[in-house]
Image (cartoon, rainbow, N blue to C red; front, side, top):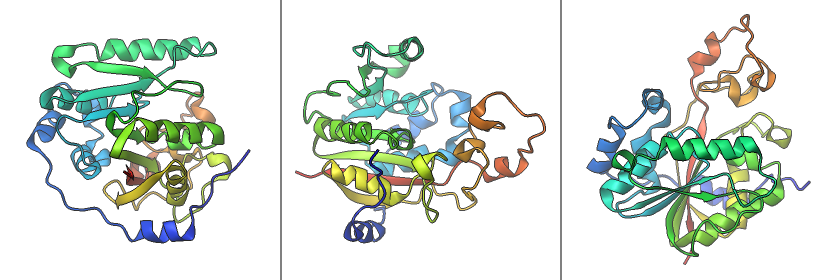
Amino acid sequence: MPMLRLASAAAVAVALSISAPVQAADAKLQAVVAGAQRAPEHKARDGARHPVETLTFWGLKAKQTVIEVSPGSGYWTEILAPYAKATGGTYVATSADLANPNISEGAKMARANFEKKYADTAKFGEVKVVGFGPVSGPLGAPGSADMVITARNIHNWAPNAAFLEKAMKDFHAVLKPGGVLAVEEHRSDPKPSAANWATGYMTEAEVVAAAEKAGFKLAAKSEVNANPKDTKDHPFGVWTLPPSRWTTAGGRGSDPNFDRAKYDAIGESDRMTLRFVKAG
């Protein structure tokens, strides 16, 4: 299987010289982040995930069409969907591709549960859902989205080089010229990534290479989600840390004798926060 390892030396040099511009956060975004529609367990993670600062860095604005890839429990959904509702924008989440005949019943159920969880239009506005997967079709009409957000997903796709390439091409196709690919990912630097990305960490160069291969250009990078306490050498990879907090391999069961203290003290992972643009 092809291994994604290094961007060109020139690309890396340029990327390392880019810093985040200062931009004021808008009041509606701040109000949504503080809003009662957000789950307490999501709000509890704000100190590690810095939602206002991160979305401001990515360039979130009123009236945009934003696609979030694989939103999981909905940390960003509870912010992005109400923000779209308040500002005349559109929020789209990707989920299980129901057109794929090989999709699992578990994946179908996860999509149904997500749609049910965020069906309250008075609270969240309209949450649109589109299928995404190895054989899925376009995420929307070509050039129809202002931003695609992928938060801590790329390490899951990287072992399947063909799927990673498809995903990046899908993002590029749906974005408008000048549209933003917003990336948050567990960062292995200065260590190399593990074989097959088994620890969940990636190098910035690997992420940049994947995006550039699809036609994106790195516009800026931010240290807003950096965590210098993360030693990146945990027994169960990044999943040893909060919020997963594994105490056994694969998270199968719980080991009551596992000492969690130092891993909880580290907090969530060290993460790269990158903004790519579609040229044009």
